[in-house]
Amino acid sequence: MNYAILIITLIPLIAYVNFMTHTKHLLMSLLCLELMTLSMVLLIVASLMTNSMSIPMISIVILTLGACEASLGLTIMVKMSRSYGNDLLKSNSNQLC
Image 1 (cartoon, rainbow, N blue to C red):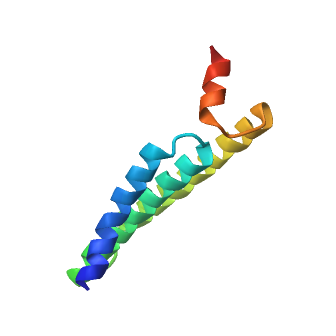
Image 2: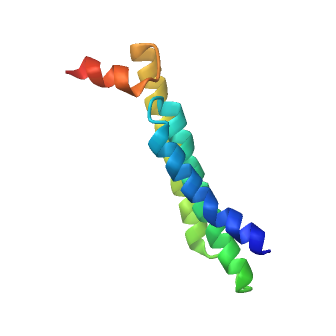
């Protein structure tokens, strides 16, 4: 059980490091943000399982916000891919100037 808690607490850190290092493509950034959101839900559920409590409404709210974030991110990525031909963030920021 201790290894599971250790892994659950390391997932947001790994996602954050990946988010900071892989900022070239929008898709990779969105996947890292989604991993952070899902790891927060996992952390809430794991902490409530240790206390023998039922799953509260906050985990459902976080899952709903994560789904909204994923759909908005996918919409932005499709719009960028159709407009610029790729999802590279650096090439799109240079074209705005």
